[in-house]
Image 1 (spheres, helix red, strand yellow):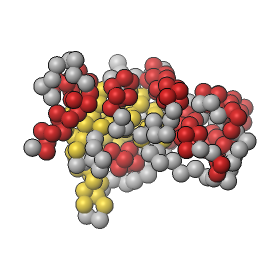
Image 2 (cartoon, helix red, strand yellow):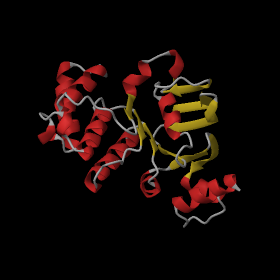
Image 3 (cartoon, rainbow, N blue to C red):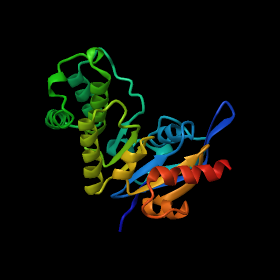
Length: 247
């Protein structure tokens, strides 16, 4: 039986007294690629930062790999996180940055070399490893940030706008890595405004608006909730569900 790898119950988070997330529930099962969908300002990035431990919620509970996020940190050993706008240390080389991340995740010396080599090859970074991050293009930096997220072969991937700045070839590799993570019994939570990409790779999603859950389920279940046929696109489904909230 599949188990929950990411679970959120009644999450609230405010900034300067203004709620960004309002009682949100979220569940990502083993073997799933789950989309977190919403308009700009819906609370997606706030939600993700709470899941990975970068923000402390005002109320609610979050579990990653069965561990309460607020009470421990060992869950981070099985977690790979890609932020929306990665901030990379510009005066390290790409290779030094990957080695640093591998060691931070507790990989041993031999594993570090192997995983840095594998992640670099997958993301096409081999010729950039000796270059300072300062001189790398936005697209290469995004590939480097993705490589850092997977360098420890995480069981759970949490990705915020992972396709930003990636060319079609790199996007294809990113989708392959997401599918492999799920296929090996892990789980992926991906937030993106590129609904076509989500539709091709996700098997379930949660749609949020103004920090609240509007709908959650498989893509077919979401289409049914929207009152649309199975041939409808995810974009049509999303817009229909959100428009109901606005009306």
